[in-house]
Length: 156
Figure 1 (tube, one colour):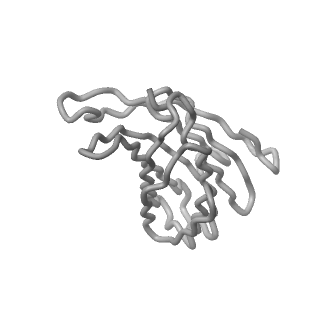
Figure 2 (figure 1 turned 135 degrees about the vertical axis):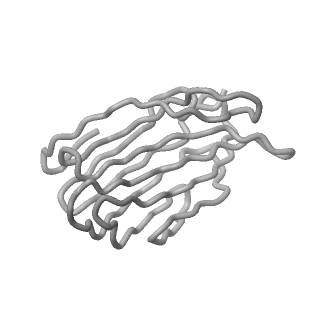
């Protein structure tokens, strides 16, 4: 993680209860990055999804505005390494473009005390490899988040 403007950034590990195998609830580790001391928060977690055809990972990324005013022009770059097939993505309050193994998200505005949700579905084909890296680029800060937890970032 780095900040172009040396703003305070920190990574906080959280847990979310989720149903990974459609049979029992499990605690899923996720990572949270806080930029500018609780103003813009990136929270990412993933769940495994087994379909009749392939196993996939579904990432849920929340960009949370914890300020009393709106935040504008937020950009995210999602880099998928070789061996990971992109399935689909959805973004609330924004748009995206896909180019090779990179997905660029553009969020025009996140209202005060609100959030934007991004859903990414991928088909990893290389076992044991990291499958997602999110880079957040704001007007005053830039940082990269690699989800460090095994359930979220690797396929076993």
